[in-house]
Structures are given as structure tokens and as C-alpha cells.
Amino acid sequence: MAYTVLARKYRSTSFDNLVGQEAVSRTLTHAITSARVHHAYLFTGTRGVGKTSMARILARALNAPDTIENGPKPPDHDRYPPLDVQQRMAEAIMRGEDLNVIEIDGASNNRVEEARQLIQNAGLAPTDNARYKIYIIDEVHMLSTAAFNALLKTLEEPPAHVKFILCTTESHKVPATIQSRCQRFDFRSIPPSRIVKHLDFVLEQEGIEAQKDVVWQVAQIANGSMRDALSLLDRLIAAAPPPLTLSGLEDLLGLPPRQRVVKVVEAINGCDAATVLQEAGGLMETGIGLEQLVEVLIDRFRTLMLVRICGDKTDLLEMSDEERSAAAEQARGFDPASLVYLITLGESLLRNLRFSSQPRALLEACLVRMALADKMASVDAVLQDATPAKKKVSP
Ligand SMILES: Nc1ncnc2c1ncn2[C@@H]1O[C@H](COP(=O)(O)OP(=O)(O)OP(=O)(O)O)[C@@H](O)[C@H]1O
Ligand SMILES: [Mg+2]
Image 1 (spheres, helix red, strand yellow):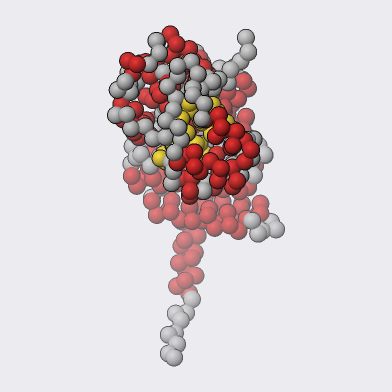
Image 2 (tube, helix red, strand yellow):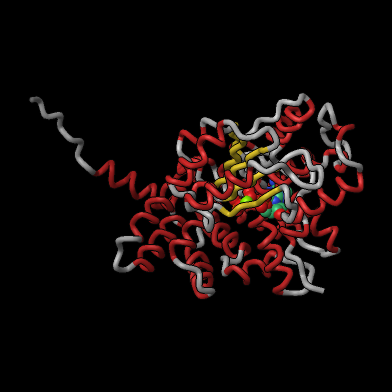
């Protein structure tokens, strides 16, 4: 049987299983039950956060409301077609194949001729006793100016049986004239903790075991996009047999092995410059770039700083419980001021690396400085004391 990617297999089918978009779901649900559905919506937000899914769910709720368990019902839903007809419609809508829910890719249908065609078709009544004809225009920002202009009139006063749902990742490219004719919803990036929960659910359904850490790492890399998280999970499952592990993910993406980064920081804490250099050298041998190495170190120092200052339960950090306690353990060896110092040192190193003709030497010198920070500080103090105080120059 053909393999269906996880992102498609687990596309949300009702308002209450779209993760992280509760505010949009609530407003749309209320609009349906109170018969105040707008004729044009604009869904914006980064990739893979549920815009197209929400558009299909709204279309389903408008044309086949009885098929959504505990879903919102329009006041006149008893005048809708019988349940089996609605069921067929709902299935086709969720597959993106229903005749009355027309999905248009704005990128490839961006010309004015296509907009005119759309307007002409919109005038025709829906088929199969469906209540509405719903146009979902994805990537709407790709329409040409002429196409946008052609749509203005219809978008303002469409026939009663027509609804528009415009979706875009780049709302600033949608003309103000279009935006002001639509009700706009901003879709949130999904917090890692919510992504983790969804990934755990998907893994359980698939019967695949995974380490906690790897799921958190996938969620973090996805950067708010559920589709990206599910696609990465797909790659990981394809790459090696379960259980899914953090080292498997690191191999797949060429990420620095977490344990080695922790060891570098441990050696910095122990003022052990030799081990710092050794471990950092080992990391570079894995193919990790110098800048990337500094970035992961800064990130680790940040984690330790937050745990040290705000405690290991802080919600400023998104990580598994195991990682939290390991970070808390390591953070105990540092005082907050030295972590601040290490971060600023790393940050200025990052800037200097870009202009250095000897970046590796610069990096190694900085790592030694990090390891010997206490001693260096006292050398600095000695030097400062030895410098004759500057005389104030009177004007
Ligand atoms: N909020 C969410 N909750 C659960 N799954 C989601 C969510 N957002 C996205 N997904 C998953 O990602 C897939 C793609 O989502 P969708 O097509 O709705 O994203 P989109 O916002 O339209 O993205 P794009 O801007 O790239 O078109 C879905 O099939 C689903 O598996
Ligand atoms: Mg989409």
C-alpha cells in the first residue's frame, strides 16, 4: 500500500483537534452557531500551522455540519441534506476534492483571466444541494495586481451562496483593499510543548517508540510549524529502525552531538582548558562548523543561565524533564554572572569569527579564555590596577 506521509495522514478534521489555534477555532465556532459567518476570511501565519486545515474544517462545518461530532451547528442545520449526503461531502472536502469547495493555488492561477473565470463560476449555484460554494485561495499573495483588482467587487459583495477563504504566509503582500474586505485571523506559531504532545500522539498511533529528548528536539527544530515537525519525524522514521534516538537525529541532520557539547561546558566549569580543546576538536571533526559550535555553546549557556536564575521549572525553556534536571545539575557549578560573561564572550567571538583569517585559532583562544575565565579576570584586574589613572582633562 502506498505510504501516506504523517502530515497528511494526521491532518486535523475538526475545530477541536487543531493544535494551538484555539482562539481562531472559538471565533469561527461562535460565528457559525450565531449565523454570523463573514463572506470572506483571510488566514495568515507561517507555514504548516493549520491554515489550509482550518479552511477545510470551516468549509466542512458550513456544508456538512452534522458530520462533526460536538461541532458547531448553524441555527438552521435541520434544513441541511441528509447525513449520508453530508458525510460524502465532508470526506471529499477533507481530501480537497469536493466540487463545491474549490481550492485554488494562487501561485499558479495568478492571472487576471483566472480571477475572471472564478468570478463567473461563483455566480452559479452550488451542486448536490450543498449550502455554499466555498473558494479557498492558497498563497493568495501571489495573485497579480490585476487579478486582485478583478476580485475586489466580488469579494465585497459576493452572491449569498459564496464564501471566500484566502490563505497566505505573507500577509504584507496582500493589498490593503483586499484585507479590508476580509475578516483576518492570525495563526500562531505552535509552541514546542504543544508540538511534542501531538508528536507523542502520532507516535503512539503508529506504534513507534522514541526517546523523550528526540521528540523535544524535533519540536524545537520545527520552529513553530507542525508540518515541519511531522516531516522531520517521517525522515527520522525512514532513516533507522525504532526506537528513535537523539543521536539518530543528530546523525541525520549533522547536528553537534549534545553529550559532547555538555562535556565542553563541564570542562569550562572545571577550568580544564586541555579537555575543552580536546572535546571541541572532536566536535569539529564531526563536521560541525565553527560558528555552529559557538552557537550551540551560547545556547547551552543561556539554558544554564535561565535555570540558574529562574529555577529548573521555568517556562522560558522548552525541554523534557530529564533535560531540565541535567541542566539544573550543570548550572549549579556556575554563578549567574559568569554565565552572562560566557554568553557575551561567545557572542563577540561569533562576530569576530566572520572577519578572522584564523578563525580556528580565535575560537580555541576564546575557549581557553572561557575555561580560565576566573584567572583571566584576576589578570585583567591586575592590569587595570597597574594602569595609571587617567587624569581628567579640563576643557
Ligand atoms: N495546528 C495544527 N494542529 C495539528 N496539525 C497541524 C496543525 N497545523 C498543521 N498541522 C499538520 O501539518 C499539515 C499541514 O497543515 P496545513 O496545510 O493546514 O498548514 P498551512 O498553515 O496551510 O501551511 P502552508 O502555509 O505551508 O500552506 C497538516 O496536514 C497537519 O498534519
Ligand atoms: Mg496551506
